[in-house]
Image (cartoon, rainbow, N blue to C red; front, side):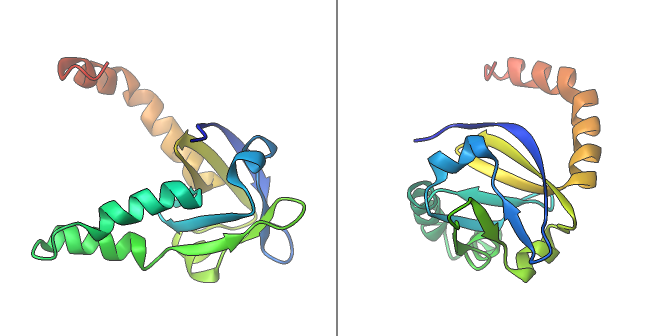
Length: 146
C-alpha cells in the first residue's frame, strides 16, 4: 500500500482537468476512486484501498440512521476516474461543486488517501488546526494514541 504525504497546490485548467502531483502519480495508477470527503473536501483512493473502504461501509448496520447516512454519503458519491497519459483527472461536476473546487486546488496526502481541497478553504483549515495542534496532541496523549 502506498503512503501519501505532503501538500501540493495545482491549477484547474480550461477543460476542468486537474494535474495530479508528481509524487502521487506513480502510486495511484491509471484509475482512481474519488468521493465526497469530510470538511468539504474530496477523498481520492486507489482502487484496492477503496475496495476495503467500500466493504467496511457496505457492512454498516442498516438499522442505524447514522451508519446508513455515512454509507450513502460516501458510496453514492464515489466515481472511478481515469488518469490520462500526462497525469490529469477530470472530476465530475457534482464533486467539484461539493468541494467548491475553482481555479486552484490543494492535494493533501493523508496516509492511505489523498484529499483535494479548495485552496482558500485549505488555507483557513490549516491555520485553524495549527493553532489547535498542541491541544489535540495532549488529548491524543491522554488516550495513549501518541
